[in-house]
Image (cartoon, rainbow, N blue to C red; front, side, top):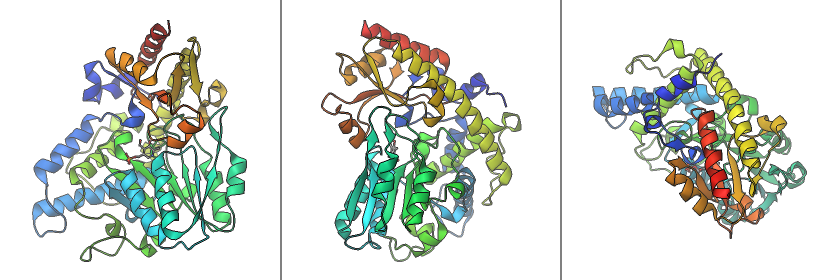
Length: 419
Ligand SMILES: Cc1ncc(COP(=O)(O)O)c(C=O)c1O
């Protein structure tokens, strides 16, 4: 299918302002459909759940529809989708619950490539349970996971393996399926952080066979909401930290308190937008027309949309890497070989000799070009690269709504700073 970048950009009110948004790994902009969903929710059906009146039942219908949409997005059952405040809070909840299943001497595997939200909760769980933590290191030359370390770290005592799908710092896509197979061979559970993969490619929890997987809607064009997938049997058996009157079944038992209903409606809107990318001619259905059932055609539209934007983003990544590499004093951390572009998402981090990353970001900001700097909570890899003291790296994170012109503007602005 063709990818019409002008039609895509026209969906996003924030993109009409002239700002170049390359801070996307920190959070993406939202299309009009997300705004419409949130406004519609707050105007037409703003209520608490389970009441005996219209607005409450319509609110319940929207939330059920959002579970079904996320089930199509991740390829699971709607009851396996848990909404929460954000990925970090959901992970702290699940890690606390899983710690109840651990005993002293059990082992947990974490990596030095992960965002700290998929490390610290496991360090805390290990501390609570007296479990041992084993670390998987990184090949510094291309910022990929050391696969030998994974093989060695996973032992018959391993109970949990926490691994990221794609790095928020250097863009590496990890061989998660391989890690999951190694972990399952010893009976361990696998917790996948897909926060940085979900905006760039189709997730399939059934094909991966992961036990848990988390992502954040605000990184895939939705509002500030976290999403957790868990195998139904595990969510069912796992003890939840919850209040007594709340339901005992998943997902309710993990969706503690009153959720961000308008944010969940907006998350439904983000999935509808990605469907639109896969089939723009179909347009959008009326806002009130929602279903709590899965829809195989929606999954097919999402697959088409994400495949189209993946190919488009490869072109942006190649141009970005080649452009930055040609600037004297720029050093990129991560995969730079254009032949290996499918092993990374388009997120590229670099340093510029003699310039503090914050100063680079500020100067780009003066040109209305948004990039991030620092360690972005990718705490271990930035320390491992020896960059923490110097302010980390500058991170440029294109997504499918960015253009080759924007990449060229960024490269020109960095070149001007270098000279
Ligand atoms: C890879 C990764 N994991 C986890 C998180 C934390 O997500 P949240 O803000 O939803 O807690 C982030 C946020 O930047 C991230 O990039």
